[in-house]
Image (cartoon, rainbow, N blue to C red):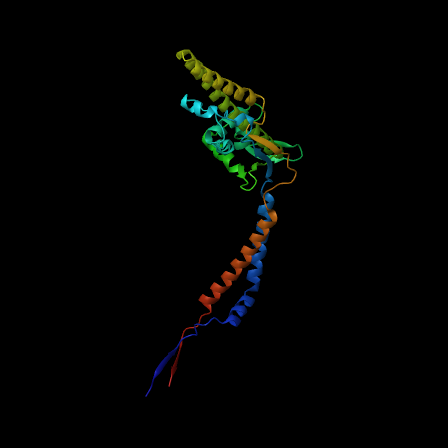
Length: 306
């Protein structure tokens, strides 16, 4: 009687066979590792240096310019006037304004930063000057040679390079900006701090002046001496707010550590790029060797006849 029995390969992984396959394919693994390592080094070398400037700021909430007038707060609310005070965190509002599309769009237009944000080709460390794409922007005429970037694109570009981080433990705020030019990165951070302080000051001064005009009209409308006295006190409080706002250059944020021109680039991480490329090449070589071994070295099941 003849019987047939199919014997299938064991499902367990044979580590010795795997190491043997890797040893046979060692030159492929080494070759791919070297190629990817060289490619990673070349890629890292071709990437432009990016410099980051940053400033550390302290919020000035609760200062004299934000005080609300003590016992006049309730009367001011009845009169329809907002005296400010500690109910709203002015620094939090300023942080959101700093990242807002309206503020950044006006900031870029006011300082004419569109060429530095959208037309830079490289930064020349020898001349310490930016070099622009000659097919897109003319430095001599200060004119765009192609379609000028939209405000939408400029703001998105700025947001991608801008960093605004708040330390929850200390309350300190860090404002940073990355660019090919270290001088421009420092200039951007400095102007952002100045402009956000001026912007928030103008908002509060405009609000106080509107309140003063409103209270002056209310004085004319009432003949009650007691109410007129209250309105005069509210006008005095709002006038004091305007005076203190104009006398404080750093209105919302006080600069603790000003932005300086960075001397060392923050990006790219060339060593990291080269290491990742080398590891990727080695893993790719191992994967190819194992796949080739699995598909081309597998033997069909043997059939024993008795």
